[in-house]
Amino acid sequence: MKVLVAVGSKYGSSREVARTICDALESQGFDVDLSDAADVRSVTPYNAVILGSAVYGGLWRRDASALAKEHREALKARDVWTFSVGMENVVVAGQPKDEAYGIAESIGAREHRRFAGALDPEKLNIGERALIRALDPPLGDFRDFADVRMWAQNVGAELREAAVS
Image (cartoon, rainbow, N blue to C red; front, side, top):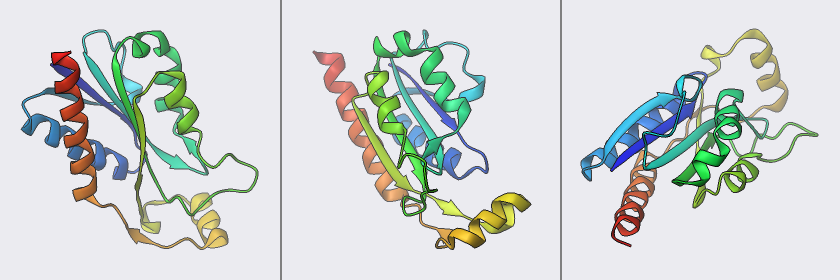
């Protein structure tokens, strides 16, 4: 079974989560491609898609949300899961808590999962650093790769079950 893991990642933290998902699925025997969301031209070659994004102020990266919108009908015809990576306790006033749940619903995703992210101020641009100073979020790497692997293993089990049905 061919699986696409596509991700919108600005600084690489979400891409590392996506790579962990790929590794877990590959260890279960799946043929997996990892791609930046902006580089996906078609989901047609894939039996299943896992689409994820970094979350900033409750919003997915534009490349990931655009992939979901542009390929909505093709995604609905496949087994799809979505995930977000971010600092859930950091929400910019006036923005939705997380648009990812609406995106997941619009493409018929079986599940949406949130994972804690990493925040390294050294990687941020000057505007982002100013925002971080104002919001004062916790800094560091809060990703739980064991949790990511467990989720990916569960996705793999669901894919196997769907293939038998």
